[in-house]
Length: 360
Image 1 (cartoon, one colour):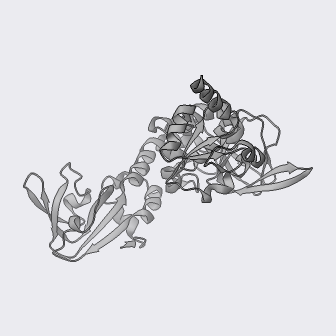
Image 2 (cartoon, rainbow, N blue to C red):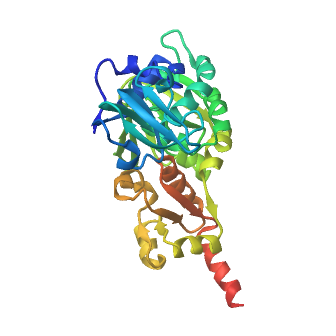
Image 3 (cartoon, one colour):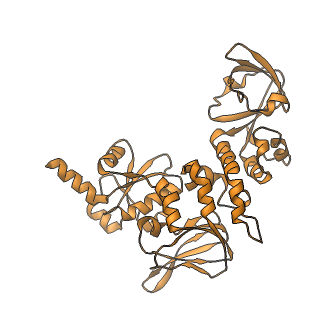
């Protein structure tokens, strides 16, 4: 099995349905994510491996396909029904036999569905972000709308109905090198996505600006103050010129924070942890040492961005702090990166109050 990356692949994909409806830029992004399986004659591809969750096309060769209703069909790669996914007409194959050597091309079903959804929903909305220099088409934007971000990041968790509305409310702005986008201590006003360029995030420590992170195309910032309704805790300055998408606070809360922020009351949170989730203490280390919950791991909110690689996307996390304010920001940051993250609503105060009521 190999990754299909030959120069003519996009043109070959353009003949397949429903891929033929995609714009060229979307096909360019999709092409590296398809896989090719080559099989010798007389083999049955459905006995060799489980194709659950895959969209499969017969790219080359001849395949005899047997269906559950007792019918059969010979499909020739690159023609007729081979331009549709195998089973795409509502008749999933039960077995098959390669009459000749064959070549199957397949995609992860979820990835393909996300790309099709975005292309169909977003193409009209993209025009609103156009400017004189460059069309604001999501399919040509680097970083932010890479397929990985659409399937694993913040956008993947959004209800489909929110996607177009969200995109229409983004403002596309050009920024210059050295431009300060937000200042530590200011009130939160916008959520930012970097389309082009790089940005430095710094914090004042004893009168000296300490660099916390360097952000690139596809990265987001400014969400912490909006999620927790606090002042900015860092300064963001453009390291290069670039282009940003920004979303006003009210739109961010309606279209991003609420769909992504999953709150659990103390009882539900304890049940979630008992079922295998991990407590995540996002307070300062001294607070964690004083009264951290049994089994909790400590990652202060200011270190969450640096800890993504240390966390397991196969596990669930329940973030907590004293009141729920800091942990709500942490849970959002994690959810934005594709983690299954929840926030203990009301924090340790609510948890303690629940336990007192149980005692009484």
